[in-house]
Picture 1 (cartoon, rainbow, N blue to C red):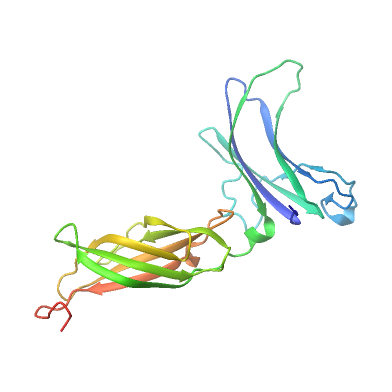
Picture 2: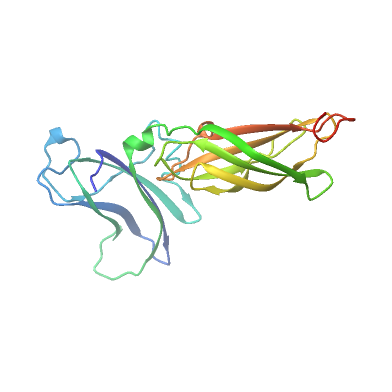
Length: 252
């Protein structure tokens, strides 16, 4: 596949066993081409089909949140970030290189667990993703809830998002409340289209004349699985209430 001019790569790995004196790195190979070069084309480097991404000691400006896990260790797992500039190249293979820190003719066993490798187009990660638009609820169906203090709500959510931009969507409920306060989002399910049917949501039963709020969220999950700012999620607040005392079920 054609390589973009600039790549960011992330690597998550863990060395185990009695011998951990090893260095882990990445290597990219490209298809043989007389026009494929690494780095700035004005420097006129020698063509090569093996490329070793440069280690990033810190995330570049503007990507600190995205690459916040770079160069951290947790429970033995190590995270590393790299960058690579290419000109007129097509990607072929991605390899993991494990080498000893001190060369020696003696064999030394080791165990390396690979957690994750990501190859990211720098232009795409720097650009802000689109926002979920026109989140609407329809086909609302109210029923008696599992307890006397609750109602059961089923509804259909629809929204708009550019085709091909998301692999799927996560649907959350922020929690229904009849008083001031905030609750943690609760995952309702996943959607692979701009449509989701929620069935049997237990929500508080409002007192007579009281209003309650139910907040629903739609988070797009991009193909590269990079996080999307919550400000770009779809957000819908449903306000429901009980009729005042003395009115019928139809509100009259």
